[in-house]
Each structure stands twice: as structure tokens, then as C-alpha cells.
Amino acid sequence: MKGLVVKSTGSSYIVRLDDGTSVECHIKGNFRIRGIRSTNPVAVGDYVEVKSQTDGESVHWIVEIVPRRNYIIRRSTNLSKESHILAANIDQVALIITVNHPVTSTTFIDRFLATCEAYRVRAILIFNKIDLLTDEEQAQLNDLRALYESIGYQTLSISALDLNAEGSNARSAINALLQGKTTLLSGNSGVGKSTLLNALFGQELTRTGKISDAHDKGMHTTTFSEMYFLEDQSYIVNRQIVNSQPGGAVIDTPGIKGFGTIDFEREEVSHFFPEIFKQAAECRFGNCTHTNEPGCSVIEAVEHGEIAISRYESYLSILGDCSESKYR
Ligand SMILES: Nc1nc2c(ncn2[C@@H]2O[C@H](COP(=O)(O)OP(=O)(O)OP(=O)(O)O)[C@@H](O)[C@H]2O)c(=O)[nH]1
Ligand SMILES: [Mg+2]
Ligand SMILES: [Zn+2]
Image (cartoon, rainbow, N blue to C red; front, side, top):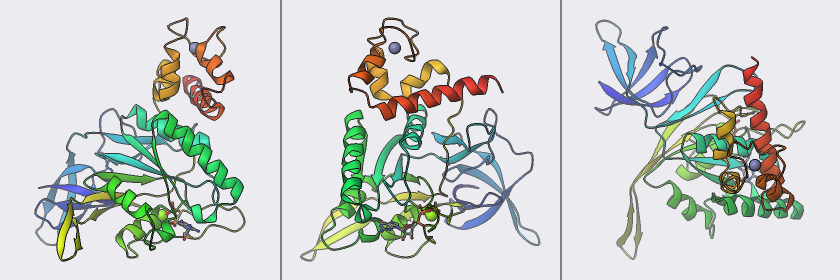
């Protein structure tokens, strides 16, 4: 029977079968997918074929993965050869970012976004914990939002803790983003992914953790990936149903540290930075790497402030990965 992988702990998987029941499944040791070398051959969001052995104690095995519509994959660190599939068959990624407590670096954001571009998955930037911002951090947030909006990414700022408070516009903005879609929540540890999930559902579906006092970092509270289903929502105003929205699904995942890009060719990295790609059309040489070529129009745009330095530095850091992997 076929079913949807809704939870992955690394050693076992919960699959929601097409008949509505859920079973815990394992995979055989030699189960590998051609072409992808990852620590987890099966990911949340995968649609799979399950074989069950039911005489005596029942045992369930995932024996096949239905070809994926898409997936997002990352390397745990730049030097690691191991890669990890964050989720499969998703409509979009909501990257949760905090300007502080903890600090999300622009390198991390840009590596994540470049990966989404590479796998052609839409990414939305959700800046969380705005209730904690100092004036200076608020200004930083405004700059970041303006930067990413100018490149074409949708951004939102919220306080997950106050999401359901009276007068919060964030709730309806988030509902609109999520309805009818499968959304992967990702970001550094401690940015509030699980807090947002709980707020969306109005109950403690999953554990949240403290930020460490010493390092102002999250403590990797969520250790597995799980998909949660939003119910169809109907609002009743004056005894009339005014809006009926199709449900959607949200996948909470463990926080991640570095974001190593994988399998990018040097020549294609600029394709994953939309504003650099656009500018690159003006370069004199077709094979310009935009690193030190005289008269490079990308470098000029950086010098004139038309391309953000932080974005250009992220671009260079990914190019660095590419040459590193050649020598390994
Ligand atoms: N002040 C404030 N605190 C928040 C907000 N959102 C989350 N937090 C706090 O941040 C801490 C970490 O939140 P989590 O939801 O566990 O973070 P996470 O992203 O799921 O972390 P991992 O599971 O480790 O990846 C908790 O103490 C939350 O209460 C917010 O909007 N404002
Ligand atoms: Mg969490
Ligand atoms: Zn160039």
C-alpha cells in the first residue's frame, strides 16, 4: 500500500497510508536511491510504497519511493561529504530568521536561498522575535527586508509568541501564505520554528526550547522532522460562513547550523542569485566569474551599491566551496 511519510526520526518513519491509518516503518539496510548520497534516503514528504508482514507481530517496510516532484538537500558542513534531504515534495520553504537571539547570518540566509533557487522551490523569509528588537536591530531588520524584497523574495516579520494576540496582522498574513500548500519550516536552532508551529495550531504539538544564556544560541530542541496538517478553515461571521480555506501542511524540522551547498558548478552559482544573474548579462565575457575580471559589470554594481556587499560575499563563499570540493 502507498502512503505519505509524515515523520522521520532517522531510524524509523511514520507513514500515513492511503487508507488513513498510520504505521511505523523501517527501511532495509541496502535501501539507497540512485544518484543521491544522503544520510537519510527517505524524507518527510516522500510518497512511498509500504510492504507489511502481518503474521505474528506486524512489521512494515518502505520498499519504494515514488519519484519526487522536488526536494531540498544540504551538506552539513562545507567539508562534509554527507548530505541530508530536508524534505521532499514541498510547495515552498519558510526560512525563519532572527536578527538577534540568535543572530542569523546573511551567509546562512543566502546559502539557503541559493539552494532553494537551485532546486526551484519558492522561499519566503519570515523574520521572527520582533518583540525583542532594540531600535538598532529594528533598523537592521528593515534593511534586510528591503534588500530581500528588492531581489524578489517575499518577507514577513512576526513574533511567534504573540501570533494569536488581538490585533496581530501577522496571523492572517501567515494563514494566507500557508493555505493549501506544503511548507517546510527551516532555520537555525532557536529561531522559533516550533513556537510558530504551536502558535499556528493553538496547542503544544511539539516541544520548544530555551536559548542558552552563555551563547545566545538555540539548543537543538527538535530532533526529528514532522509534518502537521492544517485543517480547512471556515470563519463564521454573523452566523454565516464567509471564508472556506483549503488546509495545508507544515513541516517542522531540527535547526541547522551551517549550510553547505552541494553539487554546484562554478559557472552556475550566479544563476542562484537573481540580482547577480541579471547584472551578469552585461558582463563583457560570457564566462565571467565576477571575481576579478576587469570591467566586470557585477563588480561595478557592487561598487555602486546596486548589489549588496553581503550578497556578493555570500556568492564568493559558495564559489569557494566549489573549488574546495574539486581538491577533495
Ligand atoms: N521573545 C520571543 N521569544 C520567542 C519567539 N519565538 C520563539 N521564542 C523563544 O525562542 C526559544 C526557542 O524557540 P523554539 O521554537 O524552540 O525554536 P526552534 O527554532 O524550534 O529551535 P530548534 O528546535 O532547536 O531548531 C523559546 O524559548 C521560545 O519561547 C518570539 O517571537 N519572541
Ligand atoms: Mg524546534
Ligand atoms: Zn562579471
